Length: 394
Image (cartoon, rainbow, N blue to C red):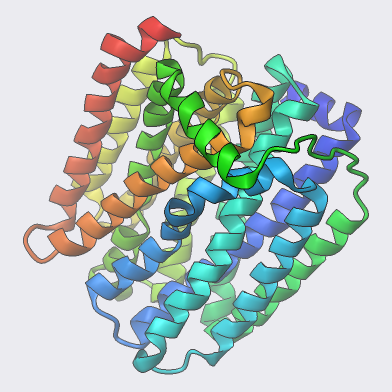
């Protein structure tokens, strides 16, 4: 913990970034509970829920070929500021969704908001190696992940309480206000980094692809990082709340508390094992993640046991995400960072979308527990892939 506080104390820019991340991510998770609760209130099917969840990730896949070039060419402060305003406006548009016939508009608004969010994320991830390096880069990634986890916990829990006490539309208004506050903080942040390139847009796209193809190590690290996308359980959590947990507690609170339990694990993980993880031990952490997911499958129908299992599921996930991302960032030449990060996020989101759609399609043919076991098995296969192939390259 001391290493994180020391970095934040000594680096004003990382401290500012961290504040912006906290507000922006809190807003994202705060409204997610409202979105999923609204879907259940409108009597949406399991497949519709899966499509809405997938719409959070599809934009990154579609725009990856050009979003990385945008990140490498434009001023990061101006770019991120515009994107945060788009997130604010699209969140306000959620207020217009009042019936099941409007679901397609909801998907469009989510698509636009997440398009802005994914470029926003890529801009920050490409920016970090330019302001911190080595251990400080790993620590900054971990701070980012901890913030993500804390806001996931607080955002989901607070969102569940607000929706329970008021309604989904109140949550959307609060959410939009948070995005705007984050934008105002960004305006006051001194960031003088500017792109230094005269290359043409299309040429940069082609050059970025060629660079990735020439570096098999980068390709393997991108694939390794992408497996964390299998651990996106929003559809399963929403369906568990509808099928089982609503008899114990209200649906919004069930969704919020289940995600909050997982996020508490996400937050605690790097604090306890951040210094322990290295290239040799990553193999064991992948197996640990597999075991906790399978355990959750066993106990998930019981709300209280499910909370404990979700805590354990989250314990390894943040460290897996931040450590594999740091390995990738340090392997990329500075001038290609935006493009490679965008393609990495694209692969991550492809895995996430495929997982989400698989859950939506499979729920009619097998139980949620069996689906969860399959997701755990994927992490076992990934651990073997890392041990046999990837570890030799790094």
